[in-house]
Each structure stands twice: as C-alpha cells, then as structure tokens.
Image 1 (cartoon, rainbow, N blue to C red):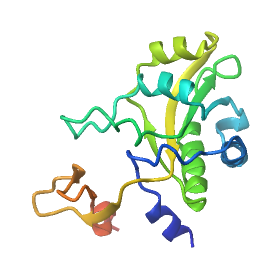
Image 2: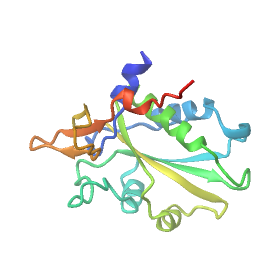
Image 3: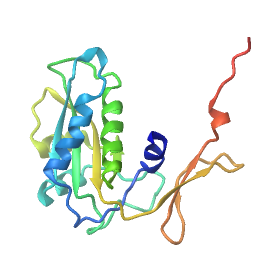
Image 4: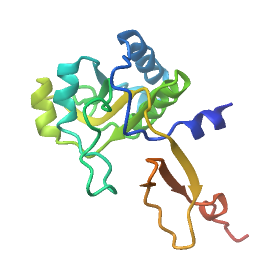
Length: 192
C-alpha cells in the first residue's frame, strides 16, 4: 500500500556505509524520476550518481546535516551514506525547474524505501563548492542532493505535543523522533 510505503519513507542520517548501493539500483531509482511528472514536460533535471568512496567524500563535505542537531556535524565514518544522487537543473532546457525536483526526489526515495534503503534530501548545500568538486558545466544548477544507503537508525513518527514543538530529536537510545501535526490540524474548513 502506498500509505505504508510513505510512512516508512523517513529521513535517515546514519547508514551502514559498507552496504553498497549498486549503479544498477541507482539507475532504477533515476528511472522512477524519469517517469514522474515534470512542469511543461520539459524534463530539465539531470542526475549525478555516486557510489565510490572518493566521490562520496567530495559530496559529503559540501552538505550540512540536521539543522536541529546543533552539536552534530553529520554521520561519522562508517555511518555515512554509501551513495548520493545530485539533482541538477539543466538551464539550457529551461530557466526554472518548477516543482520537478520535489516530485523526482519523492519518486526516488519511495523507490529506495521499497528496496530496503533509506535517504536524506539536502537543501543546505555549499553549491559553489559542490559544483567545483563535480566539475559541473555552468548551465547546470544544483537543485538538491539525496544521500542513500541502508539505514542504521530507527525513526519513529509521533504526534506533536501540547507545546507545538515540531523539532525532531534523538533519545538516549539513539532513536530519531519526528513529531507530525494531527491530520485535523492540516485541514482548513471553508465556511459555506
């Protein structure tokens, strides 16, 4: 069921780094993005696939991990992602990429979840440094980055408490808690 797949698709920040994500698996995930909707059917997204230790290190150092964890700079060696997808916007095709990267990322992450993998999407990226690290041509803009691997942490969804605090947190056992607003809190009723 799609609901179960979406509920299982959490943001993971620690992985079994030694569990490889194959090039074939990455290509299958990108194919899901390729089949997804795009604004005006322009299909301006391109993808850098990385699963080598050297390229992964170059990508890792340009990312900022978990804004709510002020004393954590990201996963330690051995718990880092074993693969990355860098989502690019090809500006030679269109000037804007609308919502395309969000749809593509959701497709990729749902496909990864179905395969027993997990991921983390980044917007907090040193885009200049990453473009230099990857030797990207100027007509490519970095839309987002997805870290992928076999999750090494438990993530649980819970209701937002009375304080209304939506910040995720880890307990003493390392379980990652993600507060979600109640369904009724999201639905705005319009008067007739």
